[in-house]
Every structure is written in structure tokens, then in C-alpha cells.
Length: 52
Image 1 (cartoon, one colour):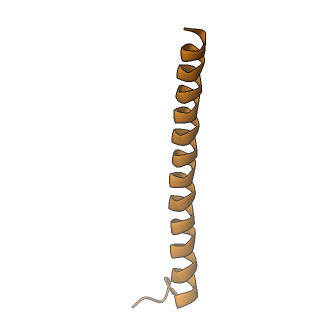
Image 2 (cartoon, one colour):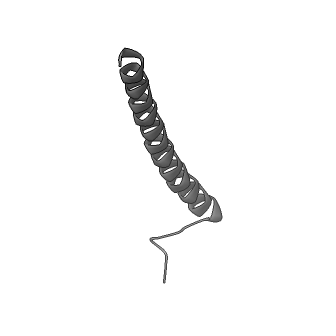
């Protein structure tokens, strides 16, 4: 008997959406950090080339 845990399709849908949103935001954040880090490295090497 599953009386105490009543999961409607809306509940499941919402929980899945929240989970997907969390994962998406996390990977998006990682991508932004990676791109920022890469562009920082590029600008540093370009400065070194300009000086040398």
C-alpha cells in the first residue's frame, strides 16, 4: 500500500525538471569557468608574445 507516498505525474515531472535544471546549470557553470580560464590563458600568452 502506497498511501503515505502519493506521487502524482506532476510531482514526478517537476522533480525531474528540477533535477535536469540543476544538472544543466552545473554543466553550464563548468563550461563558463572553462571558457573563462581558456580565454585568460590565451590573453596571457598573447601578452607574452607582444612583449617578447
